[in-house]
Length: 169
Image (cartoon, rainbow, N blue to C red; front, side, top):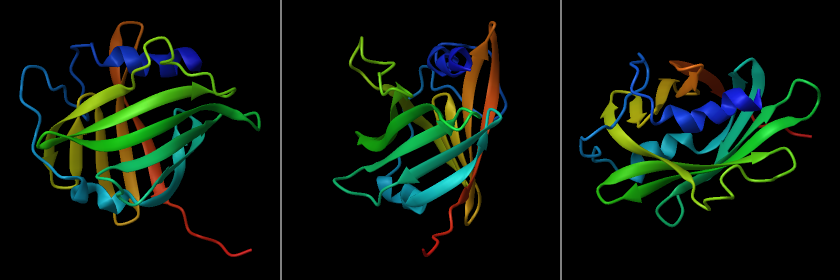
């Protein structure tokens, strides 16, 4: 499974066409503001790559929306986690992510840099980043499409979420 998820990093350089994501190429990033993504604030749960997933985003603070993602390993543990940011870059936005194994060793530790997806376009309920798309499918539902390359073939993989309902204890 880790090999498949690692392909997310490779996917950015893959030119093969896919139907749910777009590639920035030589185009200029699209204009947008962080306020357009404030609907993400809160906790989300769902499934992706055959596993349970969860993602939580803070309210915009300091000009960015920050969050974290967790994927279960199907054996009662965690496969990997991510720290994520939606940040302004000039007049555009970028989605930045750092990946961590279950023991919190970072995938990007050798470079020290986060993986960055620049905004390609914004269309009704779709935010197309370079190799990753947010699709708002309802007031409390979203699908994140990630272009993953496996064995030389690019595929758009859905991560489907619904807003988590708060519960009292």
